[in-house]
Image (spheres, rainbow, N blue to C red):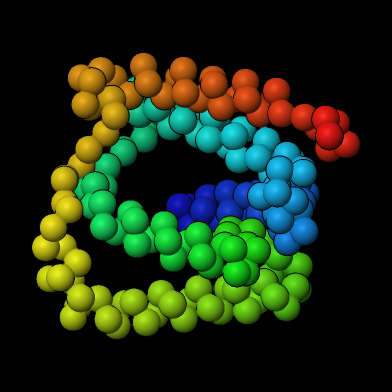
Length: 176
């Protein structure tokens, strides 16, 4: 049942990416150049709905959130690798998969490069683990935990802000 749910949600996510144009390298580049806000509206909407939805599910006892450990060197290194890959390929992992499903050859190269990079890292990890985790580990840190409040008290206003921003961004062909 869980596999079927995962397949259904994954297919729905891919369909939304494709229908919104997020699988178009041109549309992604135009979003990064602040010429087309469609993808930014999609991302802000997803973050807003996700923030509020996950915390409501947690409040009702349906979601079981496990916060990963804050590891700053990993965040910085991962962010650099992601950013460089995004700049070179013009796709992020999700949009690359959606574009590959459309049969775009450059997206297939991106997907295969990402898989190869993950494979190389998996083989190198045992040798790098001690050096990587020797500093910068802070345990599971959350914003709401730092303030001592329920997650929904932070997530609801941030989610609402994201949804409001998504509505305020200009539509394609709007502000120039």
